[in-house]
Length: 163
Ligand code: FES
Ligand code: FES
Image (cartoon, rainbow, N blue to C red):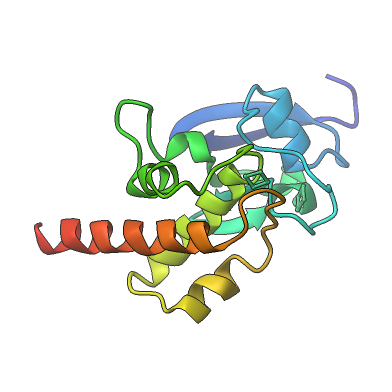
């Protein structure tokens, strides 16, 4: 370990991990270096939202977050939401609604939507627009993405009601 590096202990998708990083390394770079390439690198300046992850449950642009500040935090990437066999309702709704084309924005969109639905299970269209205002899509447009989030919200409310 170089003298300026530090071990950062955190949980990524529920699993304890240690990243050895210098002070200037962003969480985006550190996550991708650690193999979490589902976290996408777009603008690297906070404009596109492709790099969004949940930090202790709140969506954050990992390109604007220094890795050192993630010490002790719970980081959730899109890969931590569901699996191919058991996708999260948001992941299923994105697929079913045609809200994915190239898919580059999808991890960040899904994370932003998860953060929204965790704090607001019945969002209005304005709530959804505001929650996704930091996420850019070059392909699909936004209507199908909004449809997917509404669909997932309904499924999650139904699941909650069935508890
Ligand atoms: S890569 Fe982080 S906001 Fe674009
Ligand atoms: S699906 Fe291609 S950027 Fe959104």
